[in-house]
Length: 70
Image (cartoon, rainbow, N blue to C red; front, side, top):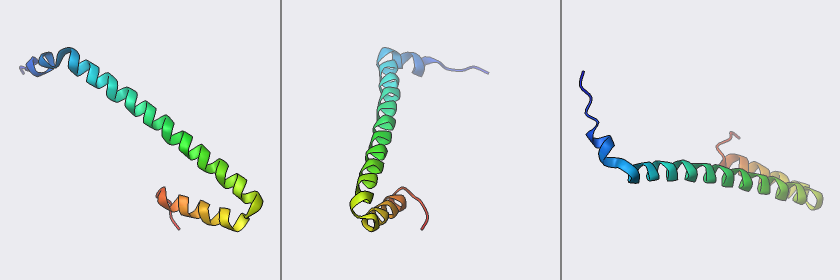
């Protein structure tokens, strides 16, 4: 079984930089997603103090957009 390594060698340093950037970008986006989720939870908790019904509706709407059922 002969494996041709030429495509991998041609990628070289630009390919490694691209792979590194993609991994970093994924980590940044995951952290951003967690931050947005924490901010949404904090806003809902603050809203519960003044208008519990509106907070419940907002929480349900967010749950539906996240792919939750019902």
